[in-house]
Image (cartoon, rainbow, N blue to C red; front, side, top):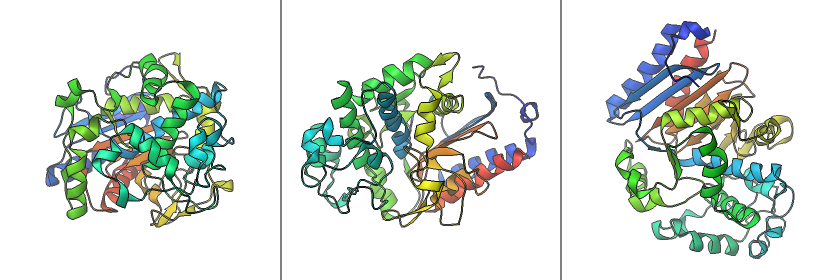
Amino acid sequence: MDWAEVPPGAVDLDRSLVEAAARSAGDRLAGRGGAGHLVVLRRGRVVLDRAFGADRSSLFLIYSCSKAYTALCVHLLVARGQLALDEPVATWWPEFGARGKDAITARHVLTHRAGVPDDFAVWTLATATDWTASVHRMERLVPRWPAGEVTAYHALTQGWILGELVRRASGERVESLLRAALLEPIGLRDTFLGLPPEEWSRSVPVVPAGGRTELANALVFNRRRYRQAVVPAATVSATGRDVARFFEMLRCGGELDRVRVLRPETIAAARQPAVDGGEVDADRTLGRPVRWAHGFHLGGVRSRADLGRFMGDLSAEDAFGAVGSDCCTAWVDPARELVFVYLTALLLPTGAGIAHHGLVADCVLRACG
């Protein structure tokens, strides 16, 4: 795809509202000393490509936006016939079925309904960055609820379970499968699940802009050990341009620059609402309503408490995307032919980041008319 920025009017967007989105992002980041990258595509053409406090080759940690990449590796294996969403995880990973987890399926894990959300009291930097230790911890988990009964965000456990499931089913490590099957074929050379040591100089440091929680998180997120580890739910590092190209591939049904990496029906399966009818579900971990799909968040905000507000209050119900630590967002609005990516290294208090990203998103959505 051509990466030359075009005037908003060339793709039927209101220029003043597009510029308002860029100003809102720039002002917030400049005022807090953080870096960011805002990219907006419409109909496959670049409307905004603005970097703030960084350059366009900078690598941002995208936190839980990583989950979308890992989930798509699972969906890819389903399409290949190597996995089935409604078979127990223990079919491929027998040790996981211990302690009452024998009924948990990949679908339960993808939709945060496996009953084994994180207990952050037991995680340390050492265990979170040790794959073998993390896998053994997954095997020892005891469900809080029966599989499929309760929605509760699996912040890190989702990634380790799916990552090890990918390895057991395919024989490939999840980061290797991601690169070989979904990134390299479409030229995404600036996306890494686990940052290579030689790319450290391009990584953007996190800036805490809140209280003790944000400061504590920044101390972990800025460690080489953390960013270089393979934590499938949390440690993808990428440029804004690469994330935008990845989500443009999703918008185009699995194809970019005439290279197909996913089937349209595979992406449709990942976008399928977790709850019948696509209704909002109350998430026990987050304490707020969320419309989950099978690896993504869904748009269509129903209330001010809805986590999907990061896509804007005007988001469509068929919009789908991801949010990471309230400071990185990426989503597709199929009907409006939009891809929106806003990566920042600014850790704001819970809720403040979602509100800001939603404000920037709504400027772009209003620009569509």
